[in-house]
Image (cartoon, rainbow, N blue to C red; front, side):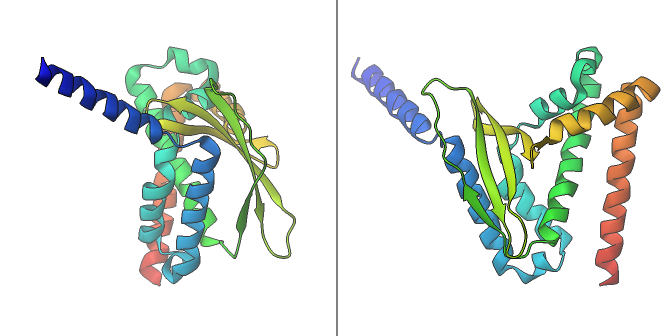
Length: 210
């Protein structure tokens, strides 16, 4: 009985730790942004476009906080229901790779940006929230960036990003729908894969010529 009580007590403690580690969505965005910008600010190789370092940074600091399955599902829209499991996995993989390209490009043009967090309130039982931020750059207008976040078993994760009021998921949805209507889901997968491969080759060529 004593051993059983010790096990129960340990489980309760572990549960408490897990709940304590559920970082609030606004804090998560703030901490991630600050970490990334600080690393970029100090790393001359990243500022110069070192692809390996940029990809390592994106993998370590950015990608873990995105729900790529949800993002892909929303971007594909109604066609997601008709996709096979294999097609869904391929779509998620290619969509993720495309977003990686987007972030790596963003890091190569970093020049002293700062992140301003807007006021945030959240209901205790909320499972989806919007975290509003503003990117400030000296000599340029501020750029509002909003993150749509959902609560998962692995913590809060972003499933959409809106820049100046334009949703990334919605922007892709129209393009994806047109591609699927013309060439089917496999056609969309091929188009994304080709673009990702082409972008990777260009990045590799630039790295080789430096």
